[in-house]
Image (cartoon, rainbow, N blue to C red; front, side, top):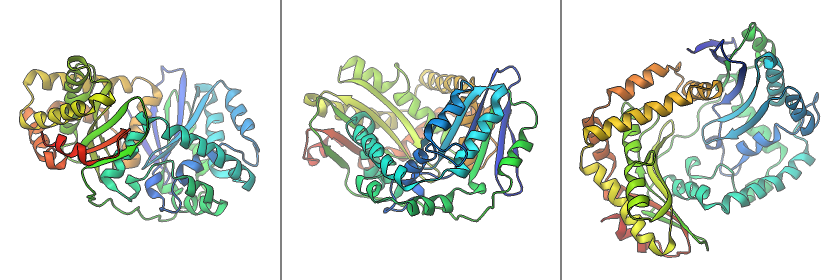
Length: 419
């Protein structure tokens, strides 16, 4: 399904040709995100993503860049993660080369003028205010800070108001010149890709000079208590409760996926059934495993009634301990297996979903993606595998809790984790 080609400068091209499709998704993903920043340049990966839309020599304004994609009826955007940054255009297949041209123009020729940088600082700070005022989103940052502390994985992708205000053109250039290199870049094209694609990418990007960038500092174990409370007056409390887990390419990655699915995937999962349906403690609740290249976390998140937060935390902690203490019944394991496979197959149905799967595999693991390998891996998981992984990872002394709400005493929650 996927084909990988590598230019002489190390830039990779990943394609998935779907001749029946009428559209094409052109995506550039870089192995460069917020974990590649220093503490002083926090937020510059995300800020750079904004600035790439502000103008090039050929298209000197944000309006002209947007207009080039609007003129073909396309959609485009970008997003920054802790380990990747992604830029994409979706459009009718006949406009593939326009999409490529615009993306490459942005990434190669953006000007980063001082006045635009200063203007965009206000936009970023307002985005930051929105983030901090949205506890359902912000709780993830509070939780990851507890897990990893003052390391890149423990910091918010968006940075701080201080680092954003202090950013200069040199801050951007220092970051981009270090990490935006061909060896860290993959161009992904999925859909009806047409003829001459590789030659066109060679023309656009083949002359880029590659350099050895090195790698970011590895994440190290961090211990700073079991509970992190962010005090905020609100009508609802938000909690994230979980444990450290496994990196992306760990041999038990499929076992922990099914463990997380049984715990909190879908409206018949253990957490949804117990926390929402049976006890009425939350409107939303879910559990999942999130893995990075060298770390991971298995956790539950919920928005709960402030007056019943103790019941909610105790119930979620009990579900985590229970799934570690008792093997999954065969029927529940099969349900989790079919849920995971079904959601994966649905993702692959669209050109963009297919290519996003492929790019994450290629960029983060440097492996040619193979959907069948994933399905085989999920099929191979046994109840014993899930029980072993759950027992190894989940214990009362390993539980970590992040809370946002009108609370100022973290110690009140400690005893709730022990059962």
